[in-house]
Image (cartoon, rainbow, N blue to C red):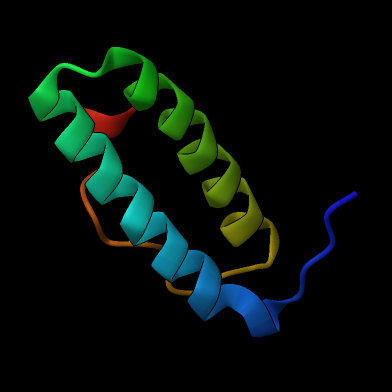
Length: 66
């Protein structure tokens, strides 16, 4: 079981940014499996961030990552 609090929102946002970078780089290299795995991580992070009541949702464009 994973438990977090709003205190960790900065870390979750930072992790989300890193995952977006991984997805972008993997797409450029044609590493589809790596893209798929990290899209799931991105979805999980978005759920966590939203669930913690983030008033300032991520601004990165995720159209290519979704």
